[in-house]
Image (cartoon, rainbow, N blue to C red; front, side):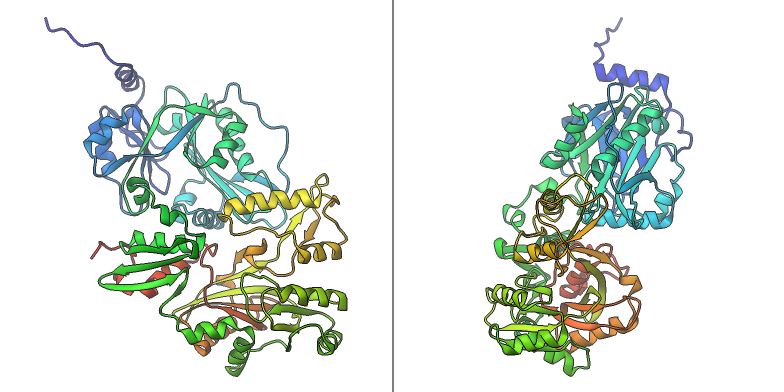
Length: 592
């Protein structure tokens, strides 16, 4: 008689799974093929494979190796990851994430209600488009819109969105998976995936409310627990989950090496890590295509690309393809104005001064409201908008002189700040830029509201955006009738800046599809006049769907981040290396 070795706990559990549930690669909400080993569910960006349902490491490894191009599968609940990795060591890697579990039997919802937004299920195609916008803004894989639409009534996958109560915009999203519906899970579990909050959202607590909503949804359907996976160094997210009551779960996740997660497989490059957001997204896109990136000065955002024997140096979106003359034209706002005016663009009336004088006072008196800015400068430094008194004019000129000895004073044009990105003399993106503001909650001081806003914005933009506590902020706050220690009423919007620059807390709202043809033509004409292949052009417009505008300035090194869903970074790399775009339009080729 042959003796059998004792079964491991995993083997015993797998035997129970086989005996008590149907195991299979399930179509959403459909029946599982009986007795087919291994369960997974499509989450749009890739398949979620339930590691505990696979009979052995080899079958799980093979399922991961079958990942389709452009997707990112993940195997969760992997009992013996080292054995799975040994089956395909050149393709698979251990995901550097922590798993967390929320016990729904002891979980208690927060008594605090969301302020300024609410959570609901995804219900429309426009919701789906907005979810993809959030995914892109957070560096996540976008999903075919049909995926969301086809699963709007799903029982196994629930996609939720946070909606702004004021304007109906989507400010966050999250996905919940019901394991019982997905693969007849005997443990009656659930999991949370794809949490994304709009980096420009003004309301606090969006992420927490989305997580709590999934927890409540899962518990109402009989789930015992809610699990999630989060990168080990995402300290902000981990702190949120622990605040809600999640505890560490010692299970593992495995991913397959692909262009999307190459860095997780090979390890991060310290010099790449030091790049700012604007340089990093360009380098990441180039590396994904197989273009070699040599980081020459990480602090300055400088790098050199090499592909197919051709080398190009860049500083963020400024490359060798932009001439020194074009840079000089953009660098001096007075010169920019003359060049584009000669090309037929409409520009505001303007004078140049070296300091406070009679000409400056007379110009203010004539126009009533003016803009003061340094002739040379960037990122909104030294710019003051809506100056109406001699005292404020003096202060604004003094501030502008810290950036340039030459000061421009121009008529204050009414309307909204419009940024148009032109690459290779084509409009790629257009966005309205809204000045920094906070919304009162009836209990917090303006100073506290700014502190919360800056904390979220700094985290969401990798330190690129925050409201400065300077003279310009204090001037606008005083004009609104407030000080830092005052408490605005619930729902009242307090404007803190008049300029909409991202670096001073401004927000960006895509309007590419609504842009009037004459505005697009004016942007291209300006780029042609300056003779610059990549440029950000600023206009003041009363309505993006009408032809009226006033040209403000041009930026030779425009930030290409935060213009989702428009492919600004992809178009920039297309310009540098057009041969990396194959005839089908895919932007990923093998290394030459």
